[in-house]
Image 1 (cartoon, helix red, strand yellow):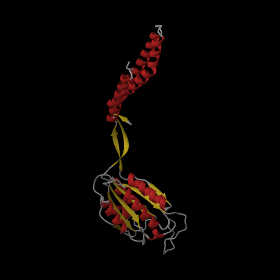
Image 2 (tube, helix red, strand yellow; image 1 turned 90 degrees about the vertical axis):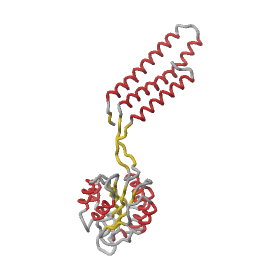
Image 3 (cartoon, rainbow, N blue to C red; image 1 turned 90 degrees about the horizontal axis):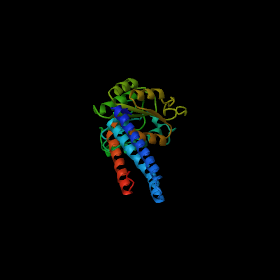
Image 4 (cartoon, rainbow, N blue to C red; image 1 turned 60 degrees about the horizontal axis):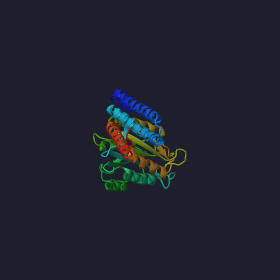
Length: 306
């Protein structure tokens, strides 16, 4: 938290504490004075008022402190949803995606998780899908219509060919607008073996303000071979971490369909958030005012106003 005017906060808190101290002392003097009278009913009446007066005094003290804090204009950095964000989902369709270590296949799991992603993004989010194997192929224009995005997903090709991660990132970046909250979500199970260098692409993209989130799907030690080849179906996790870091995003590896779906559903919300400074002055002022008003009205209603 930051304070634009720290002195106002200090004075507000000090004033609240001073009010509370004065109220407590006044209550003690009232009780002492009551003992000078012989009427038991009066003493009991004053003693009965004391806990209520302490409660009301504490409420007013907090209200005064809140007012001082409001004048200090406190602010926090928070993750705030952006309702007109743009996201491109890049889905690996290389030959290794037909591996069955993620049931029923990696490709089927990715398709189902992509569907959860489309469903999970907030209304108004513009969404595009890129399929990539040896080349990167946009499946449609970026759209804020979930039904259109679902139609684009149906055009996802069957697993085949190599893995061009760098080309997928570059293609996704070209689809995004020039400004606003923009993000790329990359889902892959392999090692880049075609096209441009993915880390170079990620660094260029990240420097333009586009966030990159990477998800590795599969198990590195499963013994699975890329169908039709003698190559092991491995994930280059270090490269995916570096790509995410260059795009100021995060990397996660998932080993089953449920985990992949859960991860993409979570990213549907994460990718459309941005960090902003949130001014707390107005909420504090309103809260302090409401607390003082409620305490005053309640005190009057119960005849406990000091």
